[in-house]
Length: 189
Image (tube, rainbow, N blue to C red; front, side):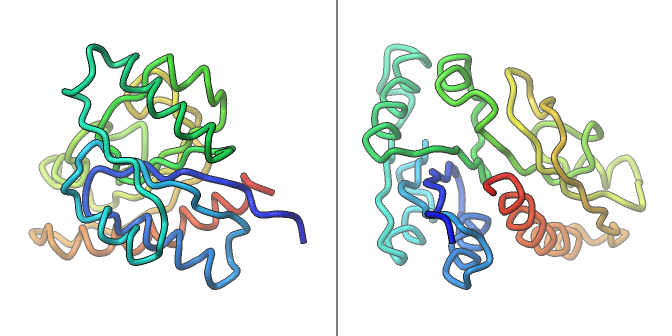
């Protein structure tokens, strides 16, 4: 077996996708090693999840930097120290700039809770429900300079539970946890 691919997981919230990825690694379903969890929200629950797995966390508040470029440069320095090969966005609620994109060309992936190109950006599940669609889904894609516009890697459909946002969100998150692991395993081979 080849050496595990060194990845960093970026998250801004609870970190359920991070946990699903780490559990898949521990089960031997994903040949990777999370070297670092990066968050822009120092109080996010993903920090607790990472500590529970003994994974280092880089928690930086973007407001503490003079510019987005300075913020991302600080992240890149930490990623290089950990020899990170791929960046995995898992609920990271910031657009990635050219600084990070150039440091990791075609090696930054994201998961989005819709069948892109439908419902990009924030609150994709809410957008889907407002439009009355019967099917939404999950998309894994490469990150480019746009918002959820990069080349699609994998998608899976999820039925909308009419009038029940919570049930729809649970179904979407369940599919995210499965699809992201499968897509990452294919990419990292």
